[in-house]
Image 1 (tube, rainbow, N blue to C red):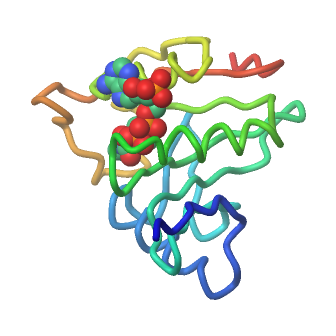
Image 2 (image 1 turned 180 degrees about the horizontal axis):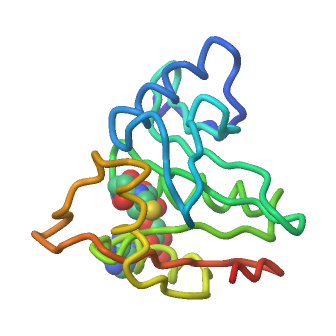
Length: 160
Ligand SMILES: CC(C)(COP(=O)(O)OP(=O)(O)OC[C@H]1O[C@@H](n2cnc3c(N)ncnc32)[C@H](O)[C@@H]1OP(=O)(O)O)[C@@H](O)C(=O)NCCC(=O)NCCS
């Protein structure tokens, strides 16, 4: 029998695993657009198969009645877990934006495919972010130096 994927707000018992899994990948604090965002303070949406965590999305309430997605992870990539999480999230929070980095071509293609528009590219934003978070690696996916923030937006969100 196939266990259906549940996209839900995590219960108090499920939330720590989501925070821990995202922290493993991104560290305990995300820096975007020059601001620090501790993951412990974020809101969460999770993809669960039974009691297994297959994906997690975190967000914050941002300026001008928008939301910013802080992290999105599909722990089994390519199985539409990321798409289901993001689609579910956008249904409730249509005016959303997020930041990815210049090295993450897969995420850029994924967000474009999910209806996001490239709102801006902030050259050298990651170079500046390392002042707040020195552990951001210099080299990212496929050996590409990580330098710039790419900002994607949905709905009425117009991040500058
Ligand atoms: C980016 C990520 C969240 C995507 O989630 P995913 O579950 O692997 O993606 P999905 O399987 O839901 O793919 C959704 C759609 O995007 C498409 N897609 C995915 N990767 C793609 C790529 N590299 N190029 C073009 N399209 C792509 C899929 O074909 C699919 O379209 P379809 O449903 O019409 O076939 C996931 O790969 C991930 O966790 N990456 C590591 C963490 C990360 O970089 N997160 C983003 C941080 S900004």
